[in-house]
Length: 293
Image (cartoon, rainbow, N blue to C red):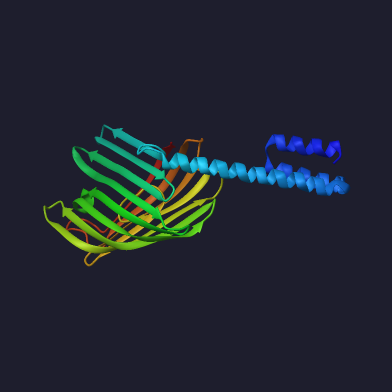
């Protein structure tokens, strides 16, 4: 092989970009056709080395995940906002949310918590809280099993506490770098405690959808529909014999920096059979800043 061909190939390999190496190899093969066999040998050796390095890195990453402790490998995002007004009206309000994810080899754990509180002239006008835990087990590349435990409180909709547990199967319909879409379904059991002191316990059915669409490097569209207020991109519908509850959130996120994101969201909450004195549908528009970690 001519020294010039060997020099440019070695230089490309030293830079570490596989696409550049492939382009240089192609150019060298074209420029020095008599040395095509030797050039192909160098290219094959390079590919084998890269494959071995990738396998070594994957094995190391898997070993790190398997050896991780309970509090390792968590990621997530948090958001908080508030306001205070005085004068003709005396108001105070706060909105906060926290989302945590932990991905393992086969298991994924999702934790969600959110709170909305507003008090006007000494009267609580909004009091809404959510806490939720969802473990997932990946059966294969598309199919997964899930569990769900959820608590919510929304006095404006007439309940001081609502508890739901569920489990079932889900399937990833779309799984690409820019778009994710999955569905899930299973039986559920729900207990509702109303503000008047009464309560109900019922079997129900749960249907869910997760959707995220990365429109560009900095803009993301999310569509949520859930039996409770959710952050993130998820959809859940819980149906029992007397009441169907749904919460849908449409959001647009724009990246400000690597860790900070602005989010504009519009939410609608629906209960088909609300307690006396409450309406079926609530809506809210919210602008928040999200910090990812």
